[in-house]
Length: 248
Image (cartoon, rainbow, N blue to C red; front, top):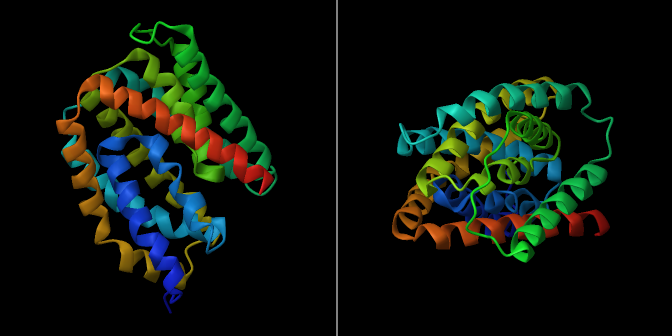
């Protein structure tokens, strides 16, 4: 039996479209807002379980959109470290307080954005070192598995490097496609894919390619600087939301 609560779908339909737009071009900071939004009407765990199959479908369309438009150099660092983060998070699943993780990631994201805005050299490109890439990518895999907030850590690594807007989103698309499909293993082992969750995912799944297409259209039409300003604002908003969730 699928979820029949109309209030759930009142939030779920725009949430799925928004997450698709994040995959297609609006950036992971936007996507980090979706599971907390659904958690207003169902449990966060159930919201995450319903969203993951939909995200995997979105990933297929996002990867097709950005084929050949990604940084292999960055992915060679990001993917292995992200997988390590998933493994660690899976071993510790249920043993760490989610609120503590939310607060730490939220404070880091907000501080990162405030530092960027206040230092006055917003057009400066900062090369990312390998150590930085390994750390933030592993943390992204970890937080994506534990609390579905992998966007802020990986954004902290990639945003200062000011990649071309399409390359930036394309690199994110490949990274999170691999991360999300890898997360299917621990989620299945933990029994999160109950029949109700899977049927509800299936019902919402046709919205996945529509959202990705809309996000990609926005990305193509927006100027590079406008897109980057939006990325930082979305990252800041997701950081604030993670902090607020701890105290609500």
